[in-house]
Structures are given as structure tokens and as C-alpha cells.
Image 1 (cartoon, rainbow, N blue to C red):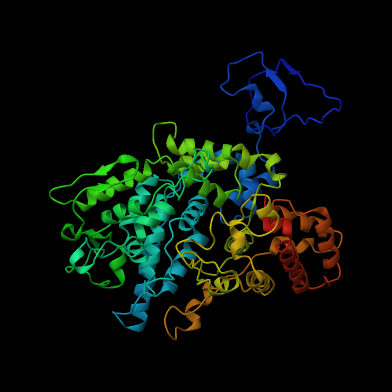
Image 2: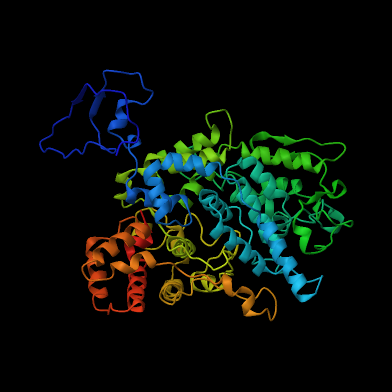
Length: 596
């Protein structure tokens, strides 16, 4: 279906092909018009006549819409597929960019925290991590800013903090940090860097909170953790990059480093003098649970004075009086404006949303938008995300058949997809889920990575064809005997047993009746009428579209159908079991696990 009703009348299409000894098959339309010249009798409309032949002139079909949503969201349902099919991907993105955050995780944690205090009559009761987990899940299941959530989740795997740290089981530490990822998902990357740098969770996690200036007499020198990871993981990477993300090498063919140990030392001087906003003494711990809410405060008496030598010959001046906040601003500007930052950040986001092995051309197209969003603005994440999702390499039919394209679905995203695809609901509309079994089975849960390097490294190459082909498969780093078996066991729990979320007490000995209406249930009602033998092919087509973008092969579907036919189909319970088994089998199929 053509999305633009063009006023143009195509007068002629001249096909000029260079004929070789053997003729090639050329498919005209939806991107396949290599060697075709198009002209029109009118030029009154801004769209070009080529839009008739390339994909930009078409609305997606349902499979294409499902594929797009698998890149742009953490999970979606049939109504979402219909919406994208009707309005197109660009209109969907534009609408998503206008949706505000409905609430903050901080506010939800505060509500839970107050409930704990009131219910236990303990005003000093702490705010444990379960409150953060519940707040995150409530946001996921009740908010319609699906694109924001996908981008924030991707950013959480780049700008990493983790509960596997010194946060002392504090929900505010995680919730307020994730809020800045949600809030900045469509903002400017420079502002995001600023917010991350001043957040006490990052200060605690990478050990520069209470980081003092040098005192050689005491053998005391600034902590280097944040200086190193800010460069290595958050902005420029370890080697010099071309704008297309390829590595710049020296005359001997060796990668040129983007920084060295001296640079780390110089940057470490920048991130000194920061401490808790609610403390009146230096070098103290968090005052209370809510100490993580406010930005860290700069104490200039503990900030390293003097000149700091940054990258590309830039110097931070010897400010008098000392001004640590200004020094930090200069350092962040230095990294934000570095030539590596656009391709480094752009490639990371492409790999988290679309494909593990984007072409250099794909990276460069997005990096150019990072450099200039078309209005002279650098670092516009909304423009970058839009460029990623609308890039021909992301949308093209051809890329789906390219063996280099695609990615292994992250286990946690597979889990979320179950809840979204089958409209997990509760009687009250409120949700609890601390995702403990999800973490046990898959090794993933928001802000729970084992290190600052995320759950997996972006350049990980699993041994075998991927490594031999010079390709990368980051998600395979957490794919082993334990997580493969864990995912299978998890599917049984979540789908077959319909125990899809982990709901527990908010406080010790809370009555089960308090949250009986917050227990999640999957809704498979619409599929129950399709379990008779003559309807099973329709059931499988619907599930294939919903879960796997129609990519599960006919051969695999026939195998699944033959299995389903062996099961009884008389009672509602038997029909329900049949649908659940179909979902289970689809979600273990290789064509589902690799999202292309």
C-alpha cells in the first residue's frame, strides 16, 4: 500500500540494464530498483518519483511493522502492530517523541517507601531494592512511551551503574539514576553526560564521590576510575575512529589509541571535590536513603587546582578561585566534541536496537546526524534515534536476508515481550515484579550488570562462524549452558505455568491479601478459538507475526503444528494449554531468537 497519494503522474520508466552473459532477476519496488532510471511529467510535489519504487513510498505490512517494533520497543502487542501498519513508522516515531514521562521512578519509590513506613509504623524504615524493581516494572507495564523506554534501556547498558555495588540495597540510588536515562532519552547527549557525572550513584559506583585533590605528602592522588570509564565506555572508546566507526591505524597497521595513561591522570584531577549534597562534612557516607536524590555538590577546597591538559591540545585553565564545576564542564565539552564520540555513541545505539554488525555506511549516516541534526545541533538523541530506526539498513527487506544483519535477542527483552505481547494484566492495574526469577534464569535485570562493562561487551566475538567471519555477537557472551537452560525453564514458568511475574511482600509479613489484585496474568483469550486442527495454521501465523515478525520458517511451523495436534482440544483448559505450548515452541525457535 502506498502511503503518499502522489499527484505526480509517472510518464515513463526507462530501464537501462547492462546485460551480461546471464540475465539477473530484478525486483522492482520496495527498494529493488538498481539500474532503473525514473522520470516524471510533473514536479509539483516535494516527494520524488523514486518513492514509487523505493521503500519510502510504502506503509509497512504487518510483518514489517512487527519487525520495526522489535527494534523500537522492549515489547509490543497486536494493537501496536496494527497502529504502525496504518500510520507508518515515521509517524509512529514522531508521536512517540512527543509523549512525556507519565511519572518518575523516584515518585513511585517514594509512594512505596511511605507505604512501608505507614504499614510497619516505622518512620525510619529503609527503601530496599525491591521498591526500585516494582517502580521500574510499574512504569514499563502502564506507560505508553515505548520508544523512550527502549532508548533508556540501551543507555543503561552503556552508562552503567549496577545494584552489584556499594549502594547498600537503596532503591533511590537506582530509581533516580534510571530517571535521568528516561528523561534524557530524547534530549542532548551533552546534558546526559552532565547529569550522569553529577549523579551520586555514578559517583559511588565509579568511586569519585569524596575524591580528594592530590596530597603527595600523604601519597594521596585522585581516583582514576571515572576518568577512565568516561573515555573508554561513555564517549570516545580506546582507539581513534573514522566517522563510520572503523578504526584508524598507524603506518604499521596498528590501531591509534585515543588516550593514554597521562590523559587518565589529567582527567582524574577534574573529578575531584564532589560529595553528598546533604552533608556538611567531607568524606562521609550517605546521610540517609534520600541522599541519592540530589546532584553531588562541589567542594572547591577539595578540588584539584591548576591547569589540566585534556585531549586535542585543550587545556583547562588555572582558575583562581578554584571552580570545580567549570572544570568538569570543560572536560565534558572536550569529550563531547571529540571526533570519536559521534561514531562511538551512534554505533553503540545501533547495536543495542537494530543489528550487532552495522555497516560503516550505516554508522556514518547516524554519526552525521549526531554531529548535526539538520539545525546545527550536536548530540540530539531524538534525531539520532530517528536516524537509526529509519535508516534503509534497518528497514530494508534486503537486510533481513543478509546473514550479517540482526542480533541475538537479549534474554530480558524476550521476557518483557511475553508480558507485552499477551497483555499481562492485574485486577487493579498496579503491578509488582522484582524480576528475581528472571535474573536467576537469564542473568539480566535492569541495572544489575556484574560490572561497568555491562552484561556483555560490545565487541564480543563468540568462537565459531561469527568470529571466523570477523563479526561480533555481544549477547552471546551471556549465552551458555546455564542461561540457555535457564531461559527454557523460565519460559515454562512464565508461559506454561502462567507465573509471569515475581510478586512478593513489600515489607516483612505483609499480608498476601494486600496485593492479591496485583498478580499478573497473561491474556491469551483471542487465541483460544484457533486450537482445532484445521485452525492451527492460523494460530501459528498469528504467533509468528506477533513474536517473530513472521520469520519462523514454514518447516518449523509444520513441526510445531504436528506436535500440537497430538494434544487434546476439548476443554477450555486443554485449549489454553495448547496455545501456551505453541508460544513456548515459537519462542525457542532459532528464527525467533535471532532477530533479523
